[in-house]
Every structure is written in structure tokens, then in C-alpha cells.
Amino acid sequence: MKLAIEAMRRLSGLAVPLLLLSAQQALAAGTLAGTTVENLAEVNYQVGGVDQEVIESSPTGNSTPGAGLGVTTDFVVDNRVDFTLVESGDLGHATVTPGELDEFLQFQLTNTGNATQDFLLTALNLALGSDVDGNIDTDQMANIEVLVDDGDDVLDAGDVDNWVDELAPDAQITIFVRADATPAVDFLAGDVANIELQAVAASAADPGNPGTAVTEDNGPDVIDAVQIVFGDAGEDNLESAQDGYIVSSASLTVTKESLLIADPFNGGTNPKHIPGAVVQYTITVANAGTEAATNVVLTDPLTDVLPIGNVTTDNGAADSCTVSDADADFCGFTGGTLTIGPSASLDVPAGGQLTVTFQVEIQ
Amino acid sequence: MKTLLNAVLVLAAIAGATHAHAQQGHLNVTTIVQKEEVVVDENGQQSTRLVAAAKVVPGDQVVYTVTFANVSDEAADNIVITNPLPAEMTYVEGSAFGPGAEIEFSADGGKSFAAREKLTVPDEQGGQRQARAEDYTHIRWVMREQVRAGSQGVAQFRARLN
Image (cartoon, rainbow over all chains, first blue to last red; front, side):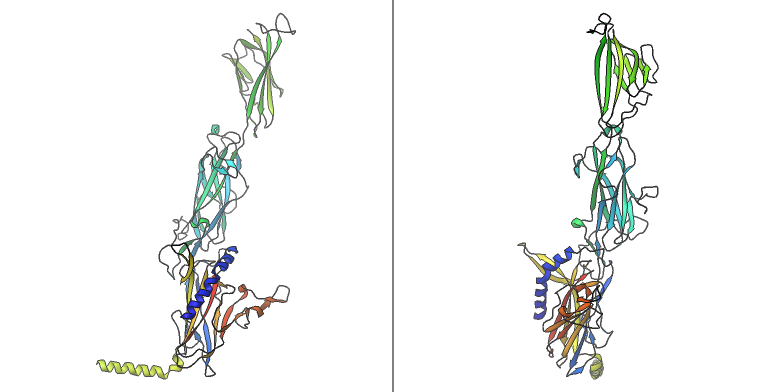
């Protein structure tokens, strides 16, 4: 007995460095849960110089000589629930344009535990102000959905489940999170919507159906049963990964300048703002955003002036848009408001600008 | 009736005794497996204790303890305890322990044994290198002294679940 105590003391002294050693090793999933690990010692000896038959060990003590007459000392390998969830595919925030539907993020779930598990998945908007990789949340995505890849790493019609069925130890699977940038008016250039995907390991006992989340066995230890031990980060059976969207959009700045051209008395020389004088307006639409602005429509309520001649743009479009011109294909003038562009497909490219010029006569 | 039963039992005991050499060896050999548990007392001091190896997951270490008690009335000489490492386990370097024993290892399935520093295995270049813990297949304890009647010895090692 004294020997045994001494043995324990010695082994205890080894504990700290040995534990450090094991932490440094990158373990794969390891021995499968449910495996019975057997051990049997054998003792050979002599009595009075005569060889005796071997005696094998047993958990409770064996003194019957003979090979095969011992009993193995066993334990059953328990279920270490361990898994990782990381962003995958195109790293960094995905770009989304206002109103865009079904824009997706990609994640990878790896079962680093030693048993096949189901995984339950949840995706959610992070709070306004949350910071993911320096991107501060300003917007909330709509209709967030989790879709588990069917094996081709491409988001397609085969990806229907929002949970993972029967993921084997060391196996990994791609998870997509899909969301809509709606309503469009909420999404301005440079806005950020951060998303978190959460995974929880569940029982794999029922293939084809999602299992229930596993819970740690904190009760009495049972030698022969497979018990569940949480080995994931935080030991809480919850792993999460964060990603998000950055809004890519047009960012328009509109400026309007006026230039007095002539008056009826002085002509073009030092003209005065008097009735009958002609003023040229130049409206500049500059796009500082990262997306082209398309189908731009300009409206300009005119008071005390009437348009004369053509409205021209710097991309060559021109149309008459005088008082009598009521058509609205390029521009129209009704109710005192000049409208330019309803069907003119005026575009302002990202980083570019559009200039519209027209003249009015002071009434 | 009771007397008769007792007589039968005595006869049975005598019959057992006559076969003592076939049925009963001189040593009683026990192997137990335990796990180290860290205990923190009310002062925050950490200590470890060995408990039943009930909850073991990959990466965990267990302690195997072989006890051999001489249950005969004769001394046992030249005792050699051999323990194959379970296939799922890796020996923890430096952990084998046995008072009064030379500890040797095998890296060839138990065919040959040598002390830790003398055991070699083929290396990738066709030469030999010193065996490492993950190469070991067996451990054995060669007792230097006899174990007298009524005494016992112990052999112990630690292994990590792969």
C-alpha cells in the first residue's frame, strides 16, 4: 500500500508538464467514442528456480495461471463534443447593393470531436454598432436563412436544410447564410450589416432528422457508458462565426449653377437679371459611390422662369423642353416643374458625373 | 443434514487443494485503470487525485496500475511484468514506475526489449534512431529482488488516449 501511495505521488509530480505537452499537440478527432480500450498485463516468474506458468491480470485480481485466463481491464471512450465554425469562401465582408436579394455568406463547420454528430444552426443579425473585423454595424438584413451545402460547395437548389445531418469525426461541411438587403432605402453606400452564425452539436441517433442538442454528463461517472464531455472552445457546445455585408451603392451629389447669358437691353454685355433675360443652368450629378446610378431622374421646380430651347446632357442627349412641350420621353415641363430623364436612361457611373444644361427666360 | 453439507464442503476444499498447482498460482495480479482529477480546495490550492477512469476522451491520460501480490507461502523470483500498450493509447514519456524494477520497452510488438535510452527503431534513412514514446508497443518491469510470501509489488505507467 505504501508503494502504491508513493507511485501516485510520483505520477502527480509529472502531471503539470505532461498536461502542457498534450495541450500543444494538435489532435485530430482521435479514438472514436464507444471504443472499449482493453489492457492486460502478464506476469512470468520462478519459484525455487523453476519457471511457473504465466499469470494474467484482471481488474479484481487473478491468480489462476494460464494464457487467456486473465480478464482485460477496460474503459469505454467517451464522446468529446468538439467542433469549429469559421468563415470560408471569399473572406471579408460581402458586398451587397440596396434591395439585392439572396446575397450569401459562406462558413465551414468541422467536427473535431470523436463521434458523429448532427449540428443545429442559427443565423442572426448582430446589433447596431457591433464590430466585425473593424466593420461597424449600421443595418439589419431581412429574411436571413441558413442553408447547408449538399456537397458541391455551391449554393444551389439542393441546399435545403438548416441543420447538418450525421457529420462524421474530422469531416467538414460548407454552410451558407443567405439574406436580403431590403428595404432598399435602408441601405446606403458604405453601410454595414453584420451577421453571426451559431452551431450547436446535437444527437446523431436519428439519421435524416435533426437531433436534439447534446448536454454534458455532469452526473455520476459510469465506466461502461459513453458519456458526453464538451471539448469545444469555452466548453459550452456553442461555436459561432461572424461575417457580414458592406453596402455598395451610388452616392450622388447634385450641384446647380447659373450663368446670366443676356438681357433684352444689354445683350451679352453686362446683362442684368431683368424680365426677358436668359439664364443658363448647369446641373452636375457626381457619383462618389462604388456602383453606377442608373435611370437618374432630375426634377427642378422653376419659379418666375420658363425653359427655352433644348435641354442637353454631356453625353449628347438633347431635347426640346419648352412650355409647349408636354412629352416626357426625355424631359417634360408641367405644373412649373422641369423633369429630366424619366425614359432617357441617364446613368452616372461610379466615380463619374453627369452634366445637364438648359436655359430659361426670366418672366 | 447440516453436518453432512459441511463435510461435502471440506471434501471439495481438499479436492481443490490437491490441484493447487494447476488452479492457483503464487501471485495474484490486478490491473486497474484510473484517471487523474484536479481538485481545488477552499484556499484555491490545486491538487490531483486518482479516480476511476470513467470519463475519458481523446487526449486524456489514464494511469494503469498493476499490483502483484504473492499469495503463496514461497518466495517468487525473477518476476517479469509485461504490459502491451493498448492500440488506442500512447505511452507518456517518463511515466513508467516500479519500485525495485528495471523498466524496459519494446518497439517491435514484444519481440525484443531494451532500456529506454538503448531502444532503437529503423529511421527513414535506413539507419537507426532512438525509439520515442509513440514507437513503444510494450513495457516490462524486470524485478531485481524476489517477492516474498505475503508481500506485493506494483508497476505503473501512464498513457494518453489517441
